[in-house]
Image 1 (tube, rainbow, N blue to C red):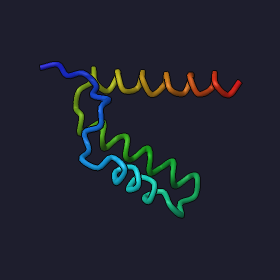
Image 2: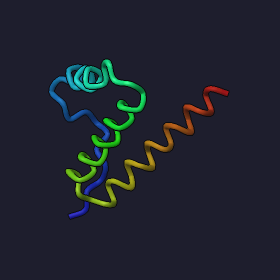
Image 3: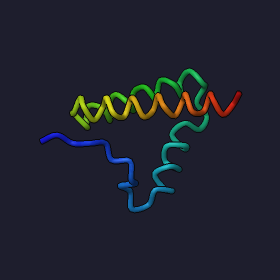
Length: 73
């Protein structure tokens, strides 16, 4: 069964999820924060376990970077 990327919030309390992520980074150096993000991405990518969904997520994430770069100009 092929899935597609869900971009709607699946959290009962999305603000609490956001705060949890922010708090996990509190006090970390930029290097440690980036390492935490990388580890989290790999864990969640493994949890998804679907290359098509992962590809779609990577494409959308990359698109937000290019959109952000265009807005900064």
